[in-house]
Amino acid sequence: MKFSTFTKAIAGGVALSAVLTGAALAEPALIYDLGGKFDKSFNEAAYNGAEEWKAATGGTYVDVELQNDAQREQVLRRFASQGANPIVMMSFMWNGVLDTIAPDFPDTNFVVIDTVVEGPNVQSILFDEHTGSYLVGALAAMKSETGSVGFVGGMDVPLIHKFYCGYAQGAKAVNADIKITEAYTGTTPAAWNDPVTAGELAQASMDAGSDIVFAAAGGSGLGVLQAMADAGKYSIGVDSNQNYLHPGSVMTSMLKRVDTAIITAFTEAGDDATFKPGVTILGLAEDGVGYAVDDNNKDLVSAEDIAALDALKAQIVAGEVVVHDYTTDSTCPL
Image (tube, rainbow, N blue to C red; front, side, top):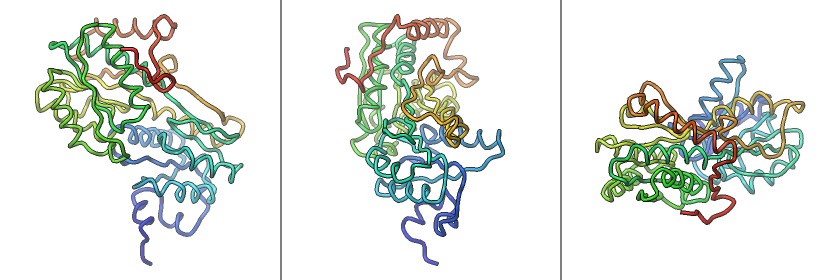
């Protein structure tokens, strides 16, 4: 049997026999977005959640890595037609495709991360990335010795501006005079997997005086972390806990608990009795976002730093500090 282009693309994920023969799956499905399952960031957080669910329950799931946007409809329709339930999709790129397919499979529950798709069988999970980014921005301003910090985003889209705006607001709250550089790796999905460009942007930020750079760029962010480590300066990771990648150089990671969202989706969305269609928002109060402290960065973040960040967190949760959400208002007040 000759492998089609589609077959080759999914060889690292779902079992080929099930996809090609249309065998019934009757288990959860997870579709990673561009950048790859092992991007050590957004997609890998989802994978880690799926694996944790598998270990805890003894259940099984199927997954697939997209190679390009053209595969979205084919992969989603194939999983749905084979009875996978629920089907979880990663990223804001599913609008349109899911709008079309979800009504065709009313008995299948769909969960999409980072965008809103309306439908009685669709749950949309969003994160308050801006509030977690506010905290790491505040930490960056506390620790910067140059009075200049940087931000390198992946694809130049509102979601990533949401990270930047929160980060900048947090930094400005600590030091109103701090200088902040802002750059993005590109305007197409390739921006999520371009660590070379991201590293060059980190270097440009350092050339402008930054001694700490926050990377919100998926797999591209690894180039930022590497560039900062090579220069003996500090980075801030994103989504997954990336502190271990360069111990002593990654000051912290802005956690976006996609892993928890996947565990919840696999546990609840496959049962109509517990499935929650509509919009679910995970923020600081729900521990949906936060920052990482572990053995790899414990010498970089002091007890006093943690106490200050905890105080800011409490103020945000209480509504005493309002963090600007770029996705609802594209005027970042800086």
